[in-house]
Image (cartoon, rainbow, N blue to C red; front, side, top):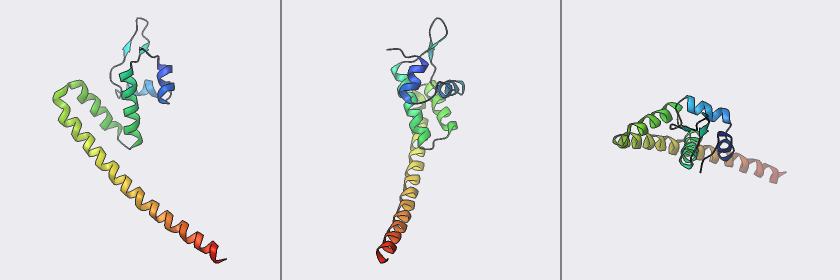
Length: 121
């Protein structure tokens, strides 16, 4: 099934401007166009866009996302390099989660303290 840029934007909850920007910045894998020059997205394109969103939401740099696209376009010989980028990113995400957990514990301690103060009054 084919999708227009507007349909894709709605499906992935991004603006058409953002999708065009991603294409301009070579963050998207090459998008096919129809005879009139309009972008024609496939299911695989939507899956990639959702993966980009995942990468961005977990703090991956645009530079690393671009590097992944470049490596994908170079073919399967780059799989080890792609794996390394993803492993490094995973480590950063795990560290961030650990830091968030520590901060959440501090917040919980403060909430408990306030609750204890309320009970005393």
